[in-house]
Length: 384
Image (cartoon, rainbow, N blue to C red; front, side, top):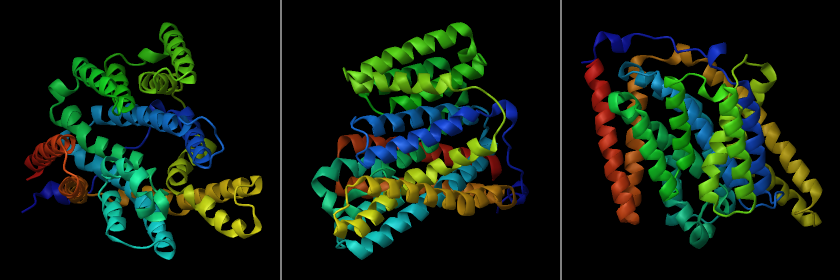
């Protein structure tokens, strides 16, 4: 039987001026616009969208890592509840829109369902992109939702990072621990930007404001310029991208007040990222008979429509849901959401491994199942 604290309603933490970074709002909308215009073939550089996503990863690692460093096991359900409302609602709305459009346009087969299962269970980043070239025609809308991979990767980060930063905080919050993680991921060229973000958050927790000293900003600017040059000649994208990303984030990490315009633009960025395929899909369909499929007017109308849809979804759906978090949250619901988050990814990993077994997936599956057990067990021991 659940103990009494599980039935209590707890207020959620509010963002104070001292912990808000207003320039990040503008950074988000710029990054998402780069992704959108890159996907619409308006930016020639092939790495533009990928680099924008890497900056997002560093930003997420810095901000979410900072939150987890202030989180205890007793407040993990609150963390997952917040993440679920923030990430899941817009994500599943976007996924449903893709499904509806795909049903009207595409042939439905078992492969089509396979990719949907990956997206529903937040593991598309592992099993989807490797099949994009061979199975693009099998995917909903010819892979128009392929960009969901990055959201799935972030969801897995939210589930894995608490093991070190919260459950095993004594060792998991040490600089040497995350330095080794950063070096390993950087060497393997796998999600290094997000680990750089967490490392920066840990350094900031031990040396507050380390990145705002004159010397630090000079060094950050120097590395940023060097990595920009490296990226421009593409010596090795995976080497320079994490440096570029974390330096940009830290250079813009200036605390201040939350402004209405910036907050709106930052809020619009997530639904825009998820749904920026809609304008292109719609106006390709409408203007193709007139020979205007790749015209400037089609690009303009697509962008206007995408921004409009994103603004609508943010203002009338996402913002209203987030505004109700305090009323909706209870510890019991937080624990339920925690379990759903972990077990949905576990189910997706098991499903994907059965269809496409590999050593890498087996290792990640074992690591994730271990993390699931340790985190959920720690939460239940706290409240049962």
